[in-house]
Image (tube, rainbow over all chains, first blue to last red; front, top):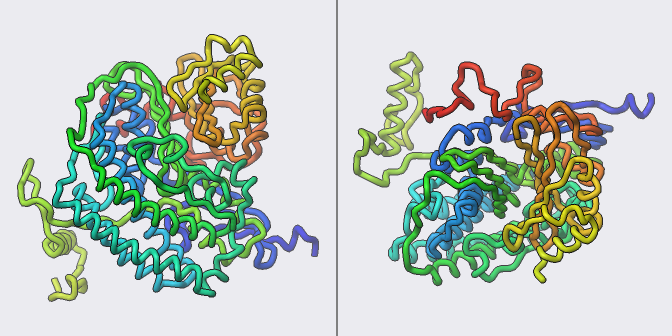
Length: 410
Length: 159
């Protein structure tokens, strides 16, 4: 049998239990080892760039926020920054601080989420349960500060839409203290737990040279020793007033990517404390024109997964001429094929998960306001479940076996 | 002299014809506009000579009879040079994958969404449109409208 005949081609995706989002890997196997990988992406293409051209800048803020379910604040900030640069708007300091505060809280929730997913992919589900339980604290905090767990709707052209009240500050510090304690425990765990290190070390190798030529970004690049971080290199919002370290690692493998993200969590806690301590007084937004003068700008933003880049061209109307978005995962997928080569098939899920590809976050209803607006009503969890069960029953679907939070059957 | 001014000076020293088209927008943003014929030289010099080792992405633009291309190059330290060039619709641009193997996906995106022609692109699957997408339909062209969906139509409603 020739070498070529020994190769078995296995399609993984676009629908596959190991993938959280649709993408397709055509994997060539030589025994258990991967000899080549061909990627096919685009299953999630929703035409958002085209959609932006037909909507106003204000509508676009909410549209681009929905590019990603996890780093939603990243996309809306990157977009409004470009528009603000074209319009020549100077933001009040307080607006910049609040934007940065939400950005770092978003990084905390995203990195904790990743740690759980990584644990799950290697069969260490205790880590998933622990980190996601901890993550709920920052999700609740984000909901209290912005009104939502994801898709915060905080940004607007010219500033932010919601202020941080003095009563919320002790809450923020409490959560940060609690999560810092937990993260220290995870760092100790990562450094001392043999099984974790043995499972992750040497898996998904990406050399520094490859990370640079393939255009890797964020923790994926930094774990291959590439010292790049937009927050330091091209500071935006309030980052030029914060003290922080860019965490890098020379391991060039999945273990290194975990170490970098854990280190970044510690930096984020420190940044949140600095932001809260030095939060300036004053307005939270300036008035922005509806029509943006002709011009163009590129905005770079360090999202939890790496650099997010938005290009906006304005033509003097209230709608942009062109919006171009390059999310970090697109830049990192180029490196995935390289990481998988010569690795084992069984490592594929954790190697793919290690670049932290974006997948959607589950929402839930929380009662924040009692007020009714435009006939809208806020539902509690149980009321929502009862409503949902009734809605389906009216359409002939029987949900009677579903129990409501351990309570009586609906 | 700031870093951006340094890059401006080096570019103009190497390519005197760029004197009037290298613009500094702010401390970390430089814009250059270059003809298609001289693009490869200028781009190669930025990558090899001035160490712009990071291609953030490529933006494609529908500019009437031409397609516009903006290559967003960055280097360590955060300075970004945006190199703009244009090419008549129907003619082809050379691929930049010899410099950046990861750039293929950005070039394929422009092929699908704008109908750009990229010469020398290695074989691979299209991105991001589906395999059965009709030929000749490029959604990011200004005159393209999705039939019957309202997408891309003037004043598209949020529903």
